[in-house]
Amino acid sequence: MANSVEKFRSMQKIIGGCHDGYCVIEKPKGMHTNGGCSCLEDLNFQGRQKVGHMLRAAQEMVDDISSLEEENQRLRKSLELYEKEG
Image (tube, rainbow, N blue to C red; front, side, top):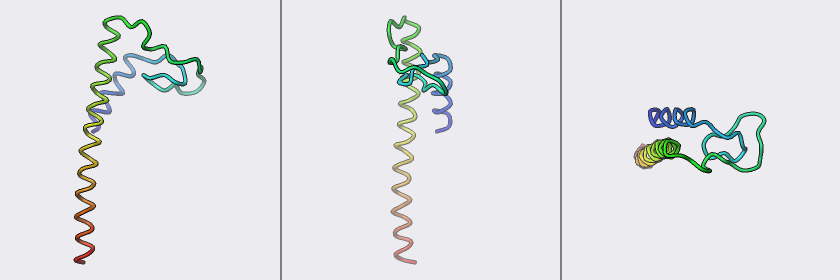
């Protein structure tokens, strides 16, 4: 999980954000505007590639989270059985 989060954060830094409160790349800290994110407007090929890498990293995080949720469910069931037998 840490690796996929590191990839995502790295891509956020590479791409940067537009400093808008609704930025889809990176939520700004401190003062920001509220006019709407402009990060995806008129992206060139390299920009689209960077966003694609970021989305891929986000999908890896989603996959990691799904695996953790499944493991959590399995452990909860084990705990319930243990408490019943206890």
